[in-house]
Length: 65
Length: 334
Image (cartoon, rainbow over all chains, first blue to last red; front, side, top):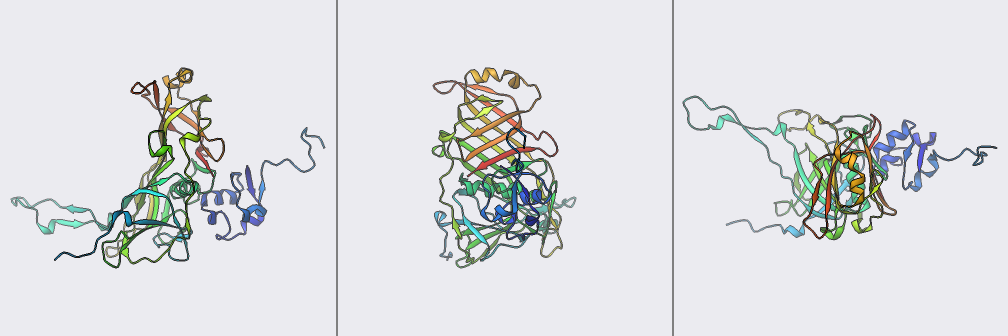
């Protein structure tokens, strides 16, 4: 699933952001507001990342509200 | 009389230190150290190339004054083979291209692997996450300072491979480490924070390997990602520390497949003949392991092999990025 960084992610220190999960590449892509494919989202990052391919709230599958 | 100490080859164990650290500084107790499933390894030793200047005319000997040890130009490489567990493979991806969290992506922008897009360099004493400290416990030559520690290690190349006829079909991850900092023999006291005892991936678990959507039954496959690295000079001619590292060429990704020769081979005739068009290669387990190369080309010659009970086809390939930002290889492993 693809994820994007929330503003709160950008304030995390290196001991909590993706650098601490051995991925400086993902960290820098998230800082650059890129979408990143993540297989297993670390528990500590769930609240700081948002699913980039989630449908907008209130929009039904057929696209009508 | 000779010294009495010795090192048992099977008594050597390796620990891999990780986490953000200034380039050139070793990870120490308090940093993360992993005991990964190492199959085989070579041990680096502090030594230097010897350069010999031209001889004097009329002198048919090499004189001491002609020689110079070039510690200012030294680099060290050593090889480590791991069982292909998720932890070992993701660490290898971190040391190679800076993405050690699945899906690990080698992209056109990965550069040297320090996390900054298209960066070709790493600077001495600047903190990075992609360089490892490797401790060879009990590999030192001294009776008490009996460990070897290599710091600032990044992967010059990594190979993933599976073969029904080798290592019980288990995934093997070969890494060639590269550093411009000399290995040190010392009494090292770090211990493993984690021991990786997970099961390696297996070729017998592959479920759907395809090339250009054509299914292939693979007897073996291998994939190598490599680049060239050089040290940046020497800060002085006493300590011989480098100014940093630079990557001096592009990532090259190539490998080969050994597949049952069947209808799929004929269906790939256009690509085997060569049409200069990238095609997708996927090596998949049902879940938990997937290698995806979106843009590969067959790199001839592809050969038919008739040494066994039935015909096999060897298909060499090279992988590309479709654009300056695209993915070359994606490794999903869990």
